[in-house]
Image (cartoon, rainbow, N blue to C red):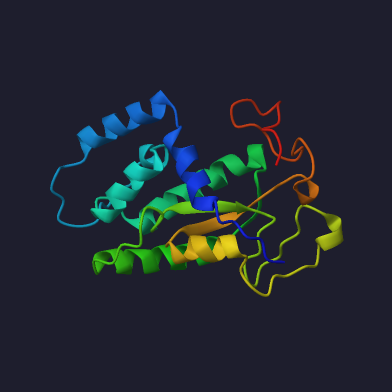
Amino acid sequence: MRIDCSNCFRMLQAFFSSLTRSTRMAWRKLRRQIPSKHAGWSANVTNDVLDLPLREVADLLRRRVVSPLELVRNALGRIRDQEPRLNAFARLTESRAILAAEQAERELAAGFWRGELHGVPVAVKDLYDIAGLPTTCSSRVRHDHKADNDSACVERLLAAGAVIVGMTHTHEFAYGIMTPTTGNPWNVAHIPGGS
């Protein structure tokens, strides 16, 4: 199954630019902690970085203030911490994500920057094929489906250097108004909505 997602990057950009004031405040706090001239990769990525808008994270990665590998490890750590209560992920792709982050780190160290998604951890819905992985669309009908190729959207994310950390749950075939298996991070008694 190939899904064309020509507007993926614009949608991601719109989402990240609409983040809240508290996110911008977290960035200001972090900015005061980061020296203006940094000789190499930061040895310690705080969770504050995970709450920053995409452009600010991309800038930190491009300037080599933040390591893609440490950023992805922190993102995976946060997912592991929150997943038991949220059940947001159909599957994690930790080993692939670590390999992709290491590759992004090598490319950035060599001065090759692909753009704002380079080295940034992202997740895709369990609707988009990732070669070699199951894509179930949260349906029992597709429980044994394994993708032969990447979907167009995944191809574009990977070409942009994004690091896919996993596949998130969706309503069955994304056809519904809610995703009942996933908890809302602000109140787990509620659902986050649907596809």
